[in-house]
Picture 1 (cartoon, protein in one colour):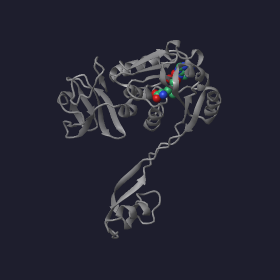
Picture 2 (tube, rainbow, N blue to C red):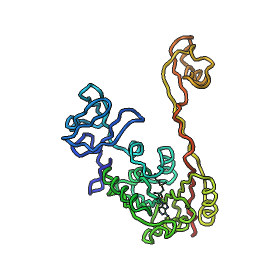
Picture 3 (tube, protein in one colour):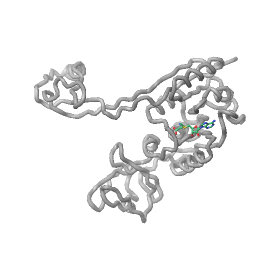
Picture 4 (cartoon, rainbow, N blue to C red):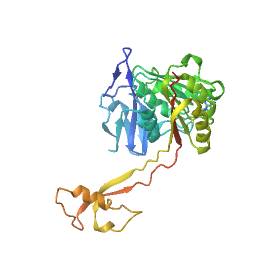
Length: 311
Ligand SMILES: C[S@@+](CC[C@H](N)C(=O)[O-])C[C@H]1O[C@@H](n2cnc3c(N)ncnc32)[C@H](O)[C@@H]1O
């Protein structure tokens, strides 16, 4: 996924080798991770794909099956990994992850603490954000989940950037060795308020904490605890709406506000015509857009808070 050599340089290898992890992409909602093996054949509804044909091809290549079907071979990224990983728990998705990385101000070199690890969906993005010289220490009290996450980080080439520990963070807090060293802390725990005092001790002055909770009652309890040592406490809910955009005929969709593909909102079309003197001719092709049916609803609330500077 991300090769970091011992001199802490990131390598963006662009060609597929035997043993590489690739994302076999059929369409945006159908893909899987495959470890390339020269002697193996991938069988799917499009036919049989000899993996020996994949070796030496650039990531992103389109490859053909014995029946003329095709798939794309994509380089694994945290964004794609989140869509193909095995769900051992609920996971964070890209919209929430993006906000977490930005508001936690995570940059290369940061030391980040996380609990629980769960399926490692967020951890994968945290690792890329701190690479090549930072580190993510992630804790889960569930031994098997921690072991599976470790295996996944080996598979995705991130193990030099992530350490998985088994620990009850709500009961024991984070290990003392991280006291005052963390740039940021992320919590995805059922009772985050129990871990917040320890998280505060781990943060550097001015460090930022984020807690993800599905229920507003959890947010309320966490916010009460946060008020004593944290400032700039803010809670967000990220609602992502996807759009289908394609060319269509204006007159067939006039007045259609919902179900089928609707034309772009009027204002928008006028603005796109500004300066071009373009006129809308009924029946002529125009760009149509509608929200896609796949919109993801509530996932959880993200509460961010910055450690108060006491000096
Ligand atoms: C919802 S999952 C986290 C998912 C993760 N954020 C992801 O994106 O894949 C919550 C995890 O917290 C762990 N957990 C629950 N209570 C814990 C505790 N007291 N200490 C450490 N981990 C705990 C669970 O075992 C579970 O794996």
